[in-house]
Image (cartoon, rainbow, N blue to C red; front, side):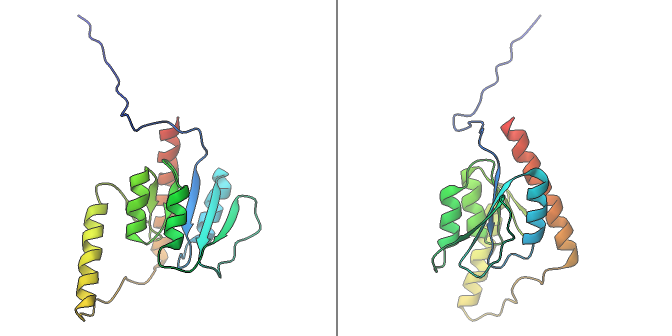
Length: 169
């Protein structure tokens, strides 16, 4: 008594042969050095995207990208180039949402992994906080970057890269 198993690949899924790339929303990113170290270990290209003023070490794997001034110029540059399986590092929730829509991994500098399951709540909370600020409410802002955030970030970055690598095989 046998049975057949049919594996159905979703129509929008295409395994990529393109190497994984890391895109960094760099203007206020406190973990750039950690990203550079991990990228060297995995030999991955990193695009460090900012409005200017961010120094990038001389390394063929690291590319500084300076975009025009504007609220979403860096985000738009990243979204225009990132693809399924790439990794986007950002504290910007709308950019993380856009990256997830592309099929990219998205993680925050504190090690928070954005997922399709969690991004809706993050967007809603962001909208609520914006509304409260617009009414004059003092919301306090995000907590300061802590030492433990650095190790959580390194772990999240490794996990994101490994998920992407598994998805490409």
